[in-house]
Length: 255
Ligand SMILES: O=C(CO)COP(=O)(O)O
Image (cartoon, rainbow, N blue to C red; front, top):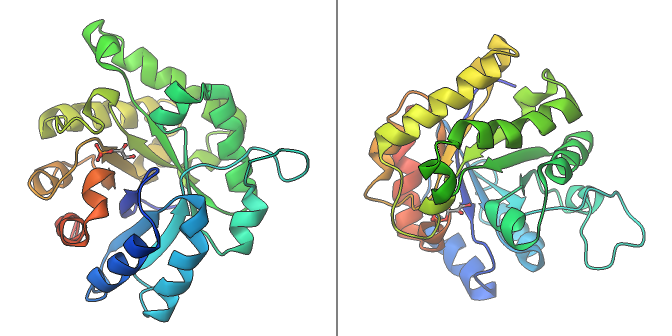
């Protein structure tokens, strides 16, 4: 896949039917651009959001994604949702390995790799989240942590298929804290990630889309997205307000 500009909304476990409706009306004046806009609500709202996007003629601008998925295709897995089900609902993207899933639900990088594999096999687009904690940064472990999160995925799917993965670098200390990484710090880490991939394939490194996530808002998005190795963002809190989210999507235009 070639490098794309993407702004994705991760609603996390927030929102309800009213939010779906207010987002559709708030985003109804969005125009088509080079930016792929994706909204990832909780499972119960995927179908409703997707149908309302189509009904509002926004489906050439906004796509829908889920926040996680099972690595299994079906069967006795109570509480889980499969890629087959997401395909059935015409969902195109899946966030995989968000730090909240890793830390609260103990997802390992090997499990995350299996999920990425399942997502690709189903013809869906994975958004793989990686990022270090504050303590790991303080200990100078950023690079080894990022490698330990990326390499199991490359080992699982092979470097050629890795270009179909969108990466979101989300330093854990920047998530939900209001303390985004500075644009220089984010660029430095994105550059490192691209170089790390380039050691295995220069072509994949050039083509892969690298998003930044962690306290992206209407005030800091422009500077972050202006960085050469930042191809867009994965937005939490600020994606729950249509006006802020539109500003963030606009800031990625023309990259
Ligand atoms: O975790 C995030 C997106 O996946 C970032 O969340 P915030 O934008 O709320 O910091």
